[in-house]
Image 1 (spheres, rainbow, N blue to C red):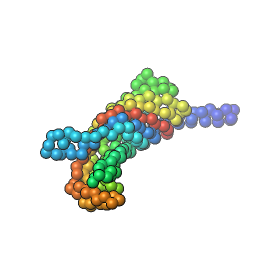
Image 2 (image 1 turned 45 degrees about the vertical axis):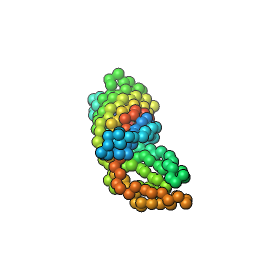
Image 3 (image 1 turned 135 degrees about the vertical axis):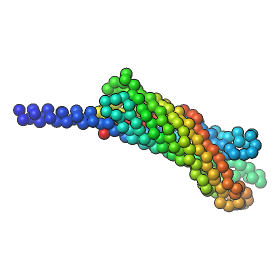
Image 4 (image 1 turned 90 degrees about the horizontal axis):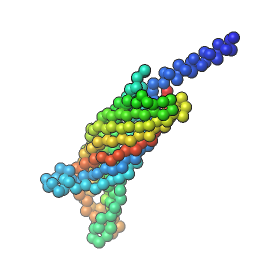
Length: 230
């Protein structure tokens, strides 16, 4: 009788623990399909303000802490990601090709509300969500191996929406696949620390006036996350 009571007690504790797992921690990777960098967004000339170059296939990673409200289909989460995209090119100076790199890095911090669609089962879950975010970013710009200094890091704000599917492998581990659309935008001011530099035997002139630029991402985001409930 005592062993039987012990087993029943253990099962009861395990069920209670399973039912009380309201928190989850997700580690995720992401691919953003497209973004634009505007090098002269405050120019007095319209055609210069409209000029941009595209940055595609931005790889990112991040973490998310989620809380599901007991006995509801609602949850709330706080997440932070890291995105970085820099592309290399060459410019011609005095008949020589000089390397240049241009791009950005940004840390989106977002608050998301989730609705778990009631058709979800024990193994497969379907959900949708949306929320707001703050974006902390800066332009990454190098010319002739000299990097421009950030004198005003950009902060931006925006909204996002998403939908996802989860597959539960055990009582505490699952995988999520999400499609997300994020309206991310921020400005950044950079300045080269010197007016000239030597690249080999070529004298390269660098702009020393503060340069304001703007980054905007409007592509689709594909996310894959590994989730642990606790």
